[in-house]
Amino acid sequence: MPLRALSRLGLALVVLATAACGPPIDLTKALEVTDVLTGYYDDGVQTKSMGDGAPPRPVNVLRPSITFKLKNVSAQALTSVQLMASFWKAGGDGEWDSVMATAISTQALPAGESTPSITLRSNTAFNLEGARAGLFEHSLFLDVTIKLFGKRGGQLYRLGEYKLDRVILPHAGREASRQ
Image (cartoon, rainbow, N blue to C red; front, side):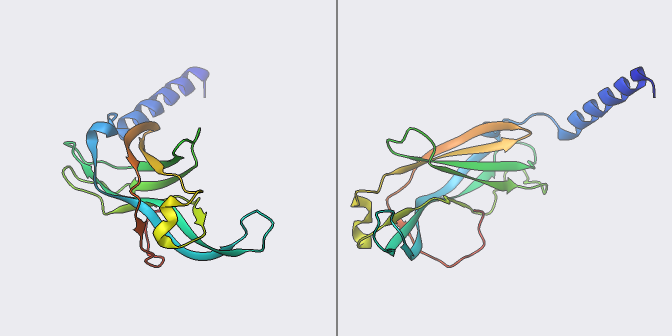
């Protein structure tokens, strides 16, 4: 194929791909974060080495967690939305952890509808010794803020920022959730 024909074919493919994706959608205007529940997921008591040279010992494992729904407040159906939750410790100079999940797959979320509940939990946890009633006063505990982002078509949108409530969310087994 001549170079000119290849160039035209390439341009046609780019135009078709762009048209298939539809117009860009600003997720900060198209989605509303609702029914937010934050806290620290009780991942049970686990035996861990605390890095102090002492033998492993039982600790309470608390994982920062957020549960919410996304409501499509736009006038059109939405598809293909990814989420990223970025976890920041109070006083920290950078991100502590982050997780990604699919919020809306290729199956469209109609205008005015909401997703099922979405739960995102940090893979990094607080490993704290002591009674549960005093865990939030433990010297190693720091408050955590979650910065929530949506991604669609390669564009990242800030959906919200949430300081976690100082509550322990009960351990409910390993139910299927988006983690």
